Image (cartoon, rainbow, N blue to C red; front, side):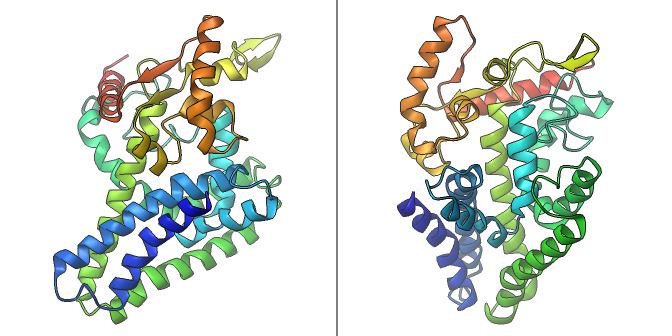
Length: 327
């Protein structure tokens, strides 16, 4: 994990230093290439470093986990809102419309058969990729503010031991730091026109947003997913299946033999294992997967698996088209 962390940080900060030092001023293509390389580093930091740290699995030492988790603020995010959306909501209520914010995004995307249908959803399998490109850009600008207000209304900030004013102040401070180094310094020192800096910044986020979406969406928004909703039992709303069975039924693994992809995305192609064992570092998923698959077969449970990354994307696109049909 330490070696991977150094590599991912270098992938992000070395091209950034090249930009600020003016090494890309001689060629716009080289300049934009540096931003694309930063997108690679940004994805690697998010999936293979920050993700484990915020789950508490980067290290056995809680202080190390807490320290490494704040690399998220360095790339423009906020750990508190990330933990609530991902650790609390997504991992507890996977694919449950109205609770899992990973599928409750914008009105233009229908990512569950339990969400309201609009006529324009018939084209979402074509335009969804554009909105996927916008994911990290929206996250780095407005999303954190909108989330803390919503989480305050639902008393979700309490367990994170932060008040709404504190959260808003910290987000603002982190955003000022982020935009100061990611935009202001390159505009001042890169040796290119300001609009090329903006173009490079947007290119970085479009590339990172698209790739990250293509990693996460095929893990859950698939035709094989159950998408079951809570039912009333004895006057209480509850799930029919246990939590573990619900996770297996709504999650898909892909590309188990692609060691390079798995290394880069922090084992998130083993999404079933990640959802069942959130307290285990991703370096162990590859060996956990055959055990989980055999156990699922033993008890007659589904184990959704796509052989390649491309096949998983194609199946996700097919699901987008299916969800775009009038119910």
